[in-house]
Amino acid sequence: MSLSALLRRHSAEFGPVLPVDLNSPQVARLDFTAANPLLDHADLRDTAAFEELVQQLLDAQEAQIGVGGYLENRVIYRRSPGVFGDPSSPSRSLHLGVDVWLRAGTPVLAPLDAVVHSVADNNNFGDYGPTVILEHSLEGTTFYTLYGHLGRREVALLRPDMIVEKGTTFAEVGPHPENGDWPPHLHFQIIADMQGRQGDFPGVALPEEKKTWAALCPDPNLILQSQHLI
Image (cartoon, rainbow, N blue to C red):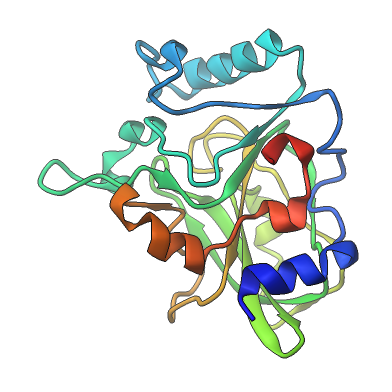
């Protein structure tokens, strides 16, 4: 059975990742592809200006929380080429998680029982910032969930192999610049195989490798279950 099929089978068992209703009318999908003309001239390296852009996108839809991004071919990673590519090689732009854009300080919860797999502060400009990876098991299958752009204070309290029960708050959405210097949001990603990595995992891939990465990182909405992501 694929991980996606396993997660569908257990969909009724997952708790929220955030203490907000992701099916609320106050939630809207945000577009960070080249199809969004507002990104044409935006100075995305200026985090304050980027945050104003996010707010503009929310206001246009009369929303308070933004969601989206899974397998979206984004232009916003041009702001940090040292993380996502360099001029001598193709740049990664295919997003492998879901972003939830909301206020810093929002609690982050374990959607099911877990142990802490690894913790790191990926503190390059435009990177994950404080990052937590949880390890889960369903029907004998091990898989992982990654939480990026967190607050530094809460993450510093976590250690590998700590038990995190379903519904437990284990982190918070971080402010910039400590969150990797992004407008506040949570990057949430499902991973089938960590491939030996600790505290970090690619959240953005080459578009031409979409099939491979989609199998390794199934749709996060299998856990988030937001109608805005369908």
